[in-house]
Structure formats: structure tokens, C-alpha cells
Length: 395
Image (cartoon, rainbow, N blue to C red; front, side, top):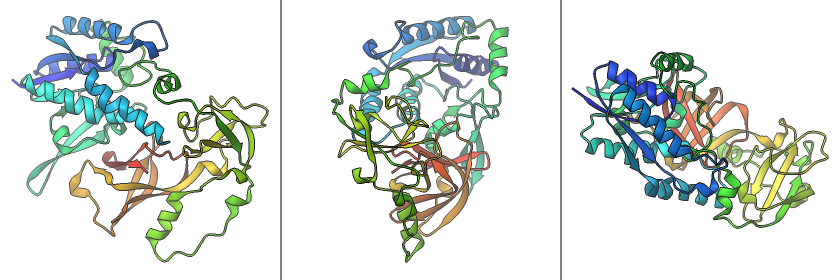
């Protein structure tokens, strides 16, 4: 009998995942990860992890499976929280959820599971795993979940073949309403529980407050750049190669104070991200101001009015060579090669037509349509049909 350790988070998805595995004849063990201690930064008074671990325990009791809690807060702080601070300091916007899956759930947690004699680790993600044969060897596929509204394969875009080999996604074939229905029929305590918001495992955190503990506030100026500014009508230079052209387009605009007018003050460019609209506290504009660029070195923020401001859009992004990750290593591009894919630059974004171009210096993703708020530090993931084949950090 194969043994599976399921990460019970205290939510409905992982609860139903555990039930389905038991129905399929696996020996199931429930494990709750405690990843956070510092309650001083959570917004609400209730302590999210206590309530969640309690719910996870009740679910395990109901399903009749063994349950234990593991404390991974040390590793979480080191691998996720410190990484977030470092990224924000450099003016990049991290994606802790993608990292959490790669570094915590399918690494630290998976190792604990394997030490308990598990054959597999299961989570409540809405995605599916496929298996094909390439050159006589098994190759694992990361496939979109059946529920188009909830497909979470993006969050697993950094997993490796070794991690996928040991992973199971029991609810990938179901839709969210079907999962809730199963939980209701089983009368699970999590059946009507709202989906968790906020950082994976930390609960609702006020990000600026959270960051401010480490990053010192530093007053700077907010500039507004008008949509019909001459900087957006510059002549396109002549390029000697495709790589040169892509590099130029991916670099985007470098803003200087002369491009705009001062409209307000902020407490630190490192607290803000491209495409952000809230938290600027600048009024009196006809349309809302969106951040089109942050300059952490000079502590300046550049904004433009309205969601269609030209400063928000770009067609090309670059992934540094050491940050290119192929889930399907057998499909990795060689230098000079290109391939048509469907890509997204954030969770919940509809897939967009794009072409990948591989060079020695890195990988370029060239979209057919200009994309809004391409953000450094976030992940771009690319699909071939419903299979996620690779991803990388936007540089």
C-alpha cells in the first residue's frame, strides 16, 4: 500500500484531497505546516494558523487519518521572508507563493514526508499531473486544473521533474463547487470555509507594515508623466540583430524627473510596485494614477493617469539565463532557437500568445499584444496547450 503525506492547510481543498486519496486506497497521513510565529504583523486579531491547524486536526479525525504538525517557521523565514525583503529592497516585486511551493512544500516539507516513509506528497492545488515517455524514460507533465476559474498550475511553475515525480494533485480533475459539495456531504468543518487570502501561511498581513519592520521609510517624490509625453514617440533605432531589438524592447523606458511634474510625496520607493493604484494618496487627477515605474536608487516613483497609460505597457520581457526553469527539460530551447507558446505574467491572467527566443544571454518572451505592468521579480510561465512547460523570473 502506497503511503501519501497530504499537506492539510485547514482549508477545504486539502481536506477533500485527503479524502479522495483515502478513497483511492492510499495510506494517508495529514501534516500541517506551521510557518509563522510573529502575530504582530497580522491584521486581524484571530490567530490564523491556530484556527487553521485546529480545522486540519478536525478533518483528520473525521477522515480517520493520523495527523501531526510540523514547525517550519525557521526555514520559512530564511527562504521566503528574507527573500521578500531582499527583493523589495532592490525594487523588485517577489512572488512568495511560487517560491513557497518550490522551497517549502515541495522541498523541506517533501523531505519530512519522505522521512516518514511516504511514497508521495499531495496538496490541494487545482492542477493535474501527466506522465509520458520520452526516450524510454518517464517524464512528468504539469497540466492545468479542470476548473478554468481556479487553475493553479502557475503557482507550481518552478517545480522540477524530481518534485513532480513524487507529487499528487487529487482535486485537479474537479471544480471548486464539486470540491465544496464533497466536503458538505462529508460534513467537514472546512466545507464552507472561505478561501484563504494573503501570503501563503502567514494569513492577512499588511505588507507595508510587514516590510517597514525591516526597510526604513525614506521620503521621496511622486512624479506624474502625461500619456502624450514626447518620450513615448521616440524614433525606433535600427537594430543589427533580433537579439538587439528584443533587448531594447525588454529594457523599456528609463524615467528621469524631467519627464514629469511633482504631484506628491511617498515614504519609500521600495514599498511600491508597477501597476499599483492604491496607497499613493495623491488626489485631484481626472483618472486614477497608476505607478508606471519605481526608481529605488533615486527613491522616485513615476505615475500616469488611467489603466491605458502607455507607460504601463510592454511587449517583451527578459529572463536571465540562470533564472530560466524548464519543468520539461526535454523541451528546453538551445541558443538561437525559438518557439510559440501561451504565456502569463501573473496568476489569473488569461494566457497570451507569445514567442520564446533563447540566446546565450538569456531568454526573451515576446508577446503578440502589449502587456500591462510587467513586473520585475514576478514569474512568467509558459504553456503548450494545457501543459505548463517552463517559467522564469522577470528581470
